[in-house]
Image (tube, rainbow, N blue to C red; front, side):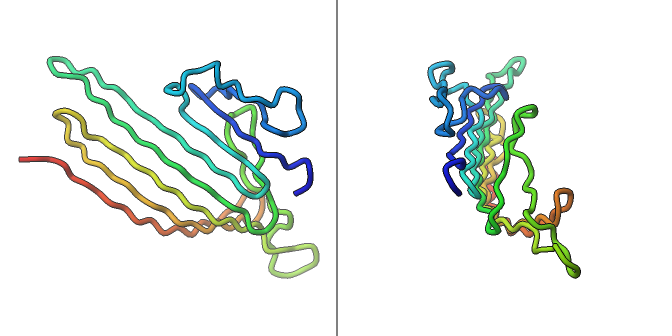
Length: 171
Protein backbone atom coordinates (compact mmCIF):
# COMPACT_ATOMS: atom_id res chain seq x y z
CA UNK A 1 0.00 0.00 0.00
CA UNK A 2 2.89 2.39 0.65
CA UNK A 3 2.93 5.62 2.60
CA UNK A 4 0.29 7.32 0.46
CA UNK A 5 -2.47 4.93 1.57
CA UNK A 6 -3.32 6.41 4.94
CA UNK A 7 -6.75 5.87 6.43
CA UNK A 8 -9.36 8.30 5.24
CA UNK A 9 -12.24 8.84 7.62
CA UNK A 10 -15.15 11.06 6.68
CA UNK A 11 -17.92 12.25 9.00
CA UNK A 12 -21.15 13.79 7.73
CA UNK A 13 -24.00 15.82 9.20
CA UNK A 14 -26.80 16.67 6.78
CA UNK A 15 -24.62 15.28 3.95
CA UNK A 16 -21.87 17.83 4.62
CA UNK A 17 -18.37 16.38 5.28
CA UNK A 18 -17.10 17.60 8.64
CA UNK A 19 -13.66 16.04 8.88
CA UNK A 20 -10.39 16.35 7.06
CA UNK A 21 -8.66 13.36 5.52
CA UNK A 22 -7.08 11.61 8.49
CA UNK A 23 -3.35 10.73 8.58
CA UNK A 24 -2.87 11.37 4.88
CA UNK A 25 0.23 13.58 5.06
CA UNK A 26 -1.70 16.80 5.55
CA UNK A 27 -1.32 19.23 8.43
CA UNK A 28 -5.05 19.57 9.09
CA UNK A 29 -5.62 15.88 9.75
CA UNK A 30 -7.73 16.05 12.90
CA UNK A 31 -11.45 15.41 12.39
CA UNK A 32 -13.58 18.37 13.39
CA UNK A 33 -15.52 16.42 16.05
CA UNK A 34 -16.25 19.56 18.12
CA UNK A 35 -18.11 21.20 15.20
CA UNK A 36 -21.19 19.01 15.55
CA UNK A 37 -23.09 17.08 18.21
CA UNK A 38 -22.85 13.27 17.94
CA UNK A 39 -26.63 13.10 17.47
CA UNK A 40 -26.29 15.16 14.27
CA UNK A 41 -23.86 12.75 12.59
CA UNK A 42 -25.75 10.69 10.05
CA UNK A 43 -22.99 8.84 8.18
CA UNK A 44 -19.39 7.73 8.66
CA UNK A 45 -17.19 6.32 5.88
CA UNK A 46 -13.68 4.87 6.06
CA UNK A 47 -11.39 3.93 3.17
CA UNK A 48 -8.06 2.24 3.87
CA UNK A 49 -6.33 0.68 0.87
CA UNK A 50 -8.61 -2.11 -0.40
CA UNK A 51 -10.83 -1.92 2.74
CA UNK A 52 -13.87 0.33 2.95
CA UNK A 53 -16.62 0.68 5.52
CA UNK A 54 -19.71 2.81 5.85
CA UNK A 55 -22.32 3.26 8.57
CA UNK A 56 -25.46 5.35 8.53
CA UNK A 57 -28.32 6.05 10.95
CA UNK A 58 -31.59 7.55 9.83
CA UNK A 59 -34.76 8.54 11.64
CA UNK A 60 -37.91 10.48 11.04
CA UNK A 61 -40.20 11.98 13.64
CA UNK A 62 -43.76 12.17 12.38
CA UNK A 63 -46.22 14.61 13.94
CA UNK A 64 -49.77 13.27 13.86
CA UNK A 65 -52.94 15.30 14.37
CA UNK A 66 -54.77 14.21 17.51
CA UNK A 67 -52.11 11.64 18.46
CA UNK A 68 -48.61 11.44 19.81
CA UNK A 69 -45.68 11.85 17.47
CA UNK A 70 -43.99 8.68 16.31
CA UNK A 71 -40.38 7.99 15.42
CA UNK A 72 -39.28 5.59 12.69
CA UNK A 73 -35.61 4.65 12.52
CA UNK A 74 -33.07 2.51 10.77
CA UNK A 75 -29.35 1.93 10.44
CA UNK A 76 -26.81 -0.07 8.49
CA UNK A 77 -23.16 -0.99 8.66
CA UNK A 78 -21.34 -2.34 5.63
CA UNK A 79 -17.77 -3.26 4.84
CA UNK A 80 -15.94 -4.41 1.75
CA UNK A 81 -12.50 -5.71 0.88
CA UNK A 82 -11.21 -5.66 -2.69
CA UNK A 83 -9.28 -8.87 -3.33
CA UNK A 84 -7.49 -7.79 -6.53
CA UNK A 85 -5.56 -4.76 -5.24
CA UNK A 86 -7.81 -1.85 -6.25
CA UNK A 87 -9.17 0.75 -3.84
CA UNK A 88 -12.16 3.06 -3.71
CA UNK A 89 -11.80 6.78 -4.21
CA UNK A 90 -13.93 9.45 -2.63
CA UNK A 91 -16.02 11.79 -4.80
CA UNK A 92 -15.80 15.16 -3.06
CA UNK A 93 -18.35 16.83 -5.33
CA UNK A 94 -21.08 14.30 -4.43
CA UNK A 95 -19.96 13.35 -0.93
CA UNK A 96 -19.92 9.59 -1.66
CA UNK A 97 -17.49 6.75 -2.19
CA UNK A 98 -16.73 6.24 -5.87
CA UNK A 99 -17.05 2.99 -7.81
CA UNK A 100 -14.18 0.54 -8.07
CA UNK A 101 -12.14 0.87 -11.27
CA UNK A 102 -10.34 -2.40 -12.13
CA UNK A 103 -6.58 -2.34 -12.59
CA UNK A 104 -7.20 -4.63 -15.59
CA UNK A 105 -10.63 -4.86 -17.19
CA UNK A 106 -12.17 -8.30 -17.55
CA UNK A 107 -11.37 -9.74 -20.96
CA UNK A 108 -11.71 -13.37 -22.05
CA UNK A 109 -9.14 -13.32 -24.81
CA UNK A 110 -6.46 -11.04 -26.17
CA UNK A 111 -3.56 -9.19 -24.60
CA UNK A 112 -3.86 -6.72 -21.76
CA UNK A 113 -7.04 -8.14 -20.25
CA UNK A 114 -7.47 -9.39 -16.75
CA UNK A 115 -9.99 -10.67 -14.22
CA UNK A 116 -11.54 -7.29 -13.40
CA UNK A 117 -11.91 -6.34 -9.73
CA UNK A 118 -13.34 -8.70 -7.09
CA UNK A 119 -14.74 -7.47 -3.78
CA UNK A 120 -16.07 -9.35 -0.75
CA UNK A 121 -18.81 -7.43 1.05
CA UNK A 122 -20.80 -7.75 4.27
CA UNK A 123 -23.76 -5.63 5.41
CA UNK A 124 -26.08 -5.53 8.41
CA UNK A 125 -29.19 -3.37 8.36
CA UNK A 126 -32.12 -2.77 10.67
CA UNK A 127 -35.39 -0.89 10.14
CA UNK A 128 -37.94 -0.19 12.89
CA UNK A 129 -41.29 1.13 11.71
CA UNK A 130 -43.12 0.69 15.03
CA UNK A 131 -43.67 3.31 17.71
CA UNK A 132 -46.60 4.15 19.98
CA UNK A 133 -49.81 3.12 18.16
CA UNK A 134 -48.06 2.53 14.81
CA UNK A 135 -47.27 -1.14 14.21
CA UNK A 136 -45.21 -1.16 11.03
CA UNK A 137 -42.96 -3.98 12.17
CA UNK A 138 -39.21 -4.43 12.24
CA UNK A 139 -36.77 -6.04 9.86
CA UNK A 140 -33.10 -6.93 10.28
CA UNK A 141 -30.98 -8.50 7.61
CA UNK A 142 -27.47 -9.65 6.92
CA UNK A 143 -26.10 -9.61 3.37
CA UNK A 144 -23.03 -11.47 2.15
CA UNK A 145 -21.85 -10.29 -1.24
CA UNK A 146 -19.30 -10.89 -3.95
CA UNK A 147 -19.00 -8.01 -6.42
CA UNK A 148 -17.29 -8.45 -9.76
CA UNK A 149 -16.41 -5.17 -11.50
CA UNK A 150 -15.74 -6.11 -15.15
CA UNK A 151 -14.73 -2.57 -16.19
CA UNK A 152 -15.48 0.96 -14.92
CA UNK A 153 -19.07 0.74 -16.20
CA UNK A 154 -20.17 -2.86 -15.65
CA UNK A 155 -20.55 -4.79 -12.41
CA UNK A 156 -22.08 -8.13 -11.50
CA UNK A 157 -23.22 -8.63 -7.91
CA UNK A 158 -23.79 -11.97 -6.19
CA UNK A 159 -25.67 -11.49 -2.89
CA UNK A 160 -27.11 -13.75 -0.23
CA UNK A 161 -29.56 -11.97 2.10
CA UNK A 162 -30.91 -13.44 5.34
CA UNK A 163 -33.80 -11.41 6.80
CA UNK A 164 -35.65 -11.54 10.09
CA UNK A 165 -39.05 -9.83 10.03
CA UNK A 166 -40.99 -9.04 13.20
CA UNK A 167 -44.66 -8.18 12.91
CA UNK A 168 -45.45 -6.56 16.23
CA UNK A 169 -49.15 -5.91 15.59
CA UNK A 170 -51.13 -6.93 18.64
CA UNK A 171 -54.82 -7.67 18.17
